[in-house]
Image (cartoon, rainbow, N blue to C red; front, side, top):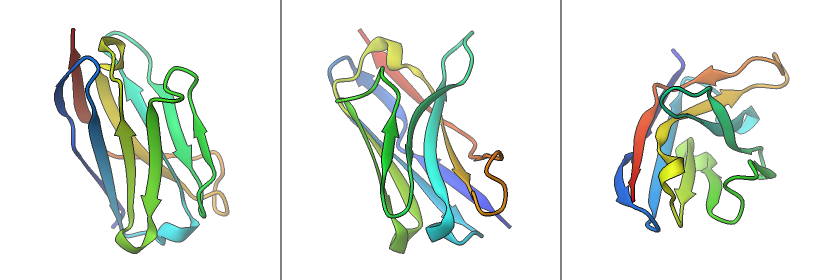
Length: 119
């Protein structure tokens, strides 16, 4: 029973910060690639950040220098720390994982958590 449980979304003022968490269960966390996508109203889902094990990271250009992705293998959890938030960051944020050794093309998704940034 594979499950991703996301938390930490909410409402924040522009320029503020917010931290998201995604706890995984039912998988061997250490062999996964973890990351985040987001989807704003009326727009396509877009890539935000990704982290491997032991911790190579990739960021979308739009969030570089503002967002930080990290993981804690002991807690089976991936995090997204979001600083200097902008109204255009408003979206539903989705956690995902991928197991490259099994299928490098397949992502598995969490349920999403809403992030709203006010002007």
